[in-house]
Image (cartoon, rainbow, N blue to C red; front, side):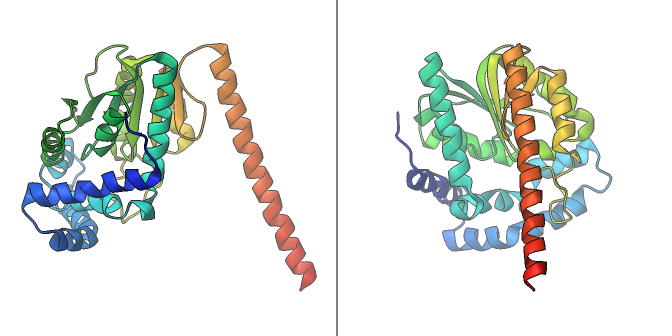
Length: 285
């Protein structure tokens, strides 16, 4: 088991870019240049391929895009800029807490991309499964697992859902994935993920609910409150900004409402503070 800190996590994250250089045969300077230009090129590529928004077009983009990999590599080239190191360190610490409490932690990384979080989770002692769409990204991840000699099972998902074993995982993690799902298939995915969690299993969900023109892949078009409603339908109850637990027990529901009212209080508190500050400035001037 590895004792991680932010510096060590950063080192592992930056290794992804070095691995891609070796995998692709492209030198580091050129990869860094493509990472800088890639996002704009990937967005143009999306608009060229995904004309009607059909499942076939979306799958074609993710499976064969020439430039999307460079968009994905951005936070690995500069982890500190995107808080990738902090986010991953928090996930690792949470997985370790499950290990200590339960003596095991079976993890599914849903939408695992280049697979770095999977590798890090194995290093803290977790039994890890990778899940993502078929294509270059999952092939690169598989190549990395072989290179770094880690045993990680790979499950390929589909555009409209994913087939998972029942009550298999203590923790499901998902980083910047759910906003890419088609809204009409969200229930399929949530149902499958809930089905795959053990009772009192956790889902650690990092996502961006906003849609912007510069991120055309964010097609979910759903606010956090709407997502929570879908989650609750399958007994996934939010207990913090990023964490859901599978349970219908009263104590878990109570934790959800405590979190909800705490969030409301903080919003009200911040709003009142801004108003007081504005009033002070007006009086002072």
